Length: 188
Image (cartoon, rainbow, N blue to C red; front, side, top):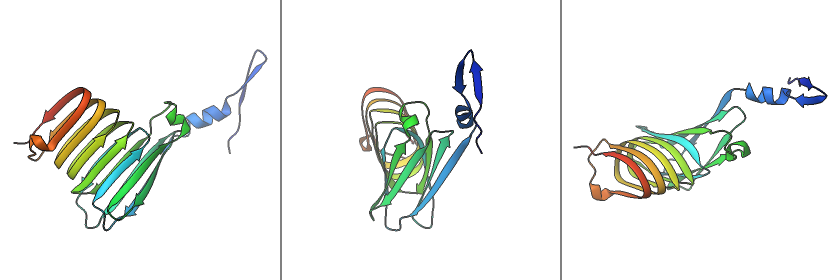
């Protein structure tokens, strides 16, 4: 049970116990799994967030999402499946929306799915094999290491490191960024 502690400072009483309890509460994680037998794409929408997406060889179409809550700052991932595409809507807590913390998410999806991300801002680490990758954001810090038949990034400002591990034509890569710092490596 939480016990409040008081500190007396020259007649002014400060309630410290609640803040101390919050700062000592550590982190937690929420794991969600969604079976999507007919889906072939993933769409990520919602609040600005830091996330990682990895693909894996799988016998069934299954999405796994892990959100990390740092202390009193949580991130909710709402999953839905329309039969063609799985949508994850990211929702940050009020504390994180104020910029007081940065919760993270990790997503695992089947190989060769399409990935479509539309967030205000993102810090993303994408690895694996995708059919198509489309990213639309205002600001991005992006690391991509994998393969895709097509890759598109639309942003106002971005710092990107793209490492295409399988051959892709330059025509299949579309980068429309007003302010760009980049390193792009193409496979032979």
